[in-house]
Image (tube, rainbow, N blue to C red):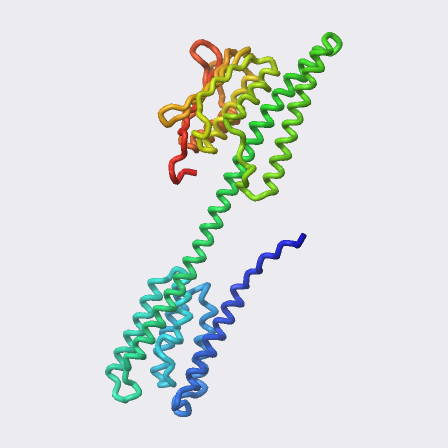
Length: 379
């Protein structure tokens, strides 16, 4: 099996800046040297300006506006000293690009406009043929300024888009981890309640009713096996890609299995499901299952109940889910624990509501109202 290829290493920004600085200095120097009257116009001072234009690039990340202003002023000084023509926009390309990339687009547009305006004015009123402004040069300068600013904006927007995508992926990952934690809490909590109940039965029956003890230990073994299976599935899910095909929990079709487990613990469980197959979205179906699972777990732990009724009915585009028992209820001192809070949060995220409290005639009721389908755009 071949090893996965290593992720490409990011280039140090300082290296990028140095390369860009050298490129600007070299291009300006080549343009100076290419002037037909280089002997008259060019000299050490002109090439020193070329080096200076390149050196200014090193300021682009820390102070892009300062770099831009100094570059524009340096272009004006360069032409005031009557050095070889290098174009008004060329020496400022890096500064314009950098300002736009660093969210200083307005400054870049203003500086580019100033360069074009000053160049157009002085070359229009110039007294010598070589100072005259040709349409080609004007269009070239405008195109160069626009291209530098557009490229800077494009690079910035691309970087920001990648950042948004990374944050969105992190949010999805966190939501998936939270969902896994909730599911694991629900399953393990339910199975541990069954294990604790049957362990107590087995302890009391030992020596007096060995058959009952064996049956209770058999239920403990089944619940333990189920818990281990769930833990293995969770570990496999965490090792695999997030949101894989095996990540969805069981839906209402698994309620009978939950009921059988509760019946084995001594409860009478009536299941009344009036939900046609395929009518529920997967997330709604999974949430309904978890509400039933957590409710039955709470009955086994706290209710001292003998009977539980689980009902679900689809009507009018909504799913009405209800789990009620005939136990002692919670009384006035009900403090919602992690289970009820987790159920309510899960249901609310899907556009539903959940209530939990004592029933009027005794016992405890958990009632959830959920849409059959998620609206377009909901998570």
